[in-house]
Amino acid sequence: MLHIITFPVHKYTHNFFDKLSHRTGISFISPLSYETMALPPPSNTVEYLSLTSESLAAQNAQRALLLDLEARKRASTIDVPTLPNQVRDMLRSMGHPIRLFGEDLAAIRQRLRMELARQEVMREEELGGIAGVDEEMMVGDHEVLKEEKVEEITEVTYTHASKELVRARKVICDYSLEKSRSRLDVERRRRRGMVRWTRGKKRARLFNQDDDDDFAGEAYIGLKDDALLVKELDDNCEKIYKTVRNQALEGSQYGDVRPLSAVCTSSLPLGCEGRFPKLIATGGWSGGIKIWNGGTDHNSVRGEEQSDLSPLDLLGAKSIVHEDRIMGVAMRPYVTATAASDGFCTMVASASIDLTAKLCKVTLNQDASDEMDVDESKSEALKYHVEEVAHLKGHAARLCSVAFHPTGQYVATTSFDHTWRLWDVATSNMHEGTELLLQDGHAKEVYGVGFHQDGSLVATTDFGGVVQCWDLRTGKSICHFLGHARRVVCSEFSPNGFQLATAGDDGTIKIWDLRRRRASASIPAHTNLITQLKFSHSTSSQNGEFLVSSSFDGTGKIWSTRDWKMLTTLQGHEGKVMGIDVLDGPDCAVVTCGFDKTLKLWK
Image (cartoon, rainbow, N blue to C red; front, side, top):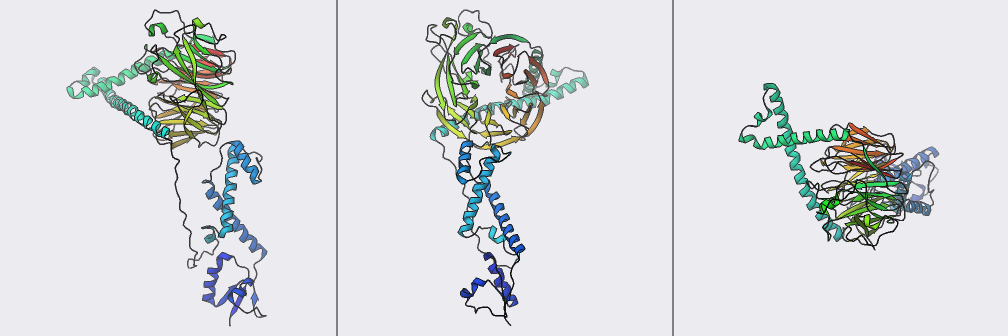
């Protein structure tokens, strides 16, 4: 006797019921299949079995769950806009709420990504099913005939770099390989010398002999040199720490009519102390840039008679550089300074909330009667002329920080538009800046930026607590660090090349080991937001032996890089300390600027 059972069946389960009917002799068909199968209409002997409402609801719920899981899988591959206004426009066009209760910008972008993924999944469902989801709806029998899978071809695409960016990456690669080779050679010598020096000191204590006796013989000449290098570094570090612990306020100067927001100093090439002047550049809320004396007699640098200039004397100024507040300033390294007619020239970069960055050329003033702003200072007293030479436009939101590449040929800027950009200094002009790279990848506002001393890496920080490390030679993100509880606003690479310091709104300084890609130290440094970090410059007199930090708690602090203990506290500002930097030289001078409109020098 032929038994025919009819009830609604999902369209993707026909293969299973066909095989089941072949085994049992019971036919399972839907009421709509009589015409297609040429079956007689059902009689009174036909038994109808219908799914209950609970079963249909469970089936629909299961399918909805599978579709949602598929959408979540695909959400990570969906590209969404970076700017908040573009995200809002897309949600508005899709008919979804712009912001739900308790959502931040990252959650809004994630919701948009999920909605786009759901729409993509539903479109495929309407076109005939989704590979992977349909098979899960079938009964889990190993002998069930499965539909043919549609193979998904994953194609990796790359954005073609411009010719200018390719040339820049070649320059950066050549520079970084040479610098890293010399740095690693010194590090290897230091480590060999450390082992040899430790053994020599132990033997000297055991046998009561001079340390130099352990280095006798021609076979140990190289090792002796390495050990002496370590001894020299240790002795120099001891002198530096003694000097730093005795630092006091050397001078204070009102820098502007409005608060000073950023400060930077000139970095001297290795072994070139005295050949280049020490300069200090400041930027403030008034939108102007000023150049101050860092302690060098500038006439003696030029081979002339000495002058009566004192530290923190005004050397040059330009009152109107930006239309709004300056958020960051950076000075071009002297090692790449181009020679002007008088043999000296440097450059200062500034970033402002007016959506622009500017490059200003600083040259020795040949003629005191050159055209200058009357309200800046007496023209005959200014030793340097500040001239705007390039206008960098392109960011869609306020700028935050700016930094020069160690080669001095490129400058990086960060912005609230969630991106950072790399610009070419040589080809930028007053009309437009040459943008080499526009890099996104941050979910929130990008604030801090810092270059590795080899020029190979750049670190950027954002308001989501994320620190990203990028390889400038390939354009890839090589690693990211998570550990800050709140916004991260500054990053600085150590001169040793394998440590990165970051700080922000949580008041802690974190030291990241680039070799192990994890935090090696966490310093509870300040009680408020940390505005800036700077290592002592890698010169013959400092070698990155200490780290300085400034904070909204009104203090600056100096930390030992050997054990990360505090050496001293710089107290003197009446309010927030907005910036801090180190002046090259054996006196280990530190300069700070604050919300109280003052610039202070500590020695």
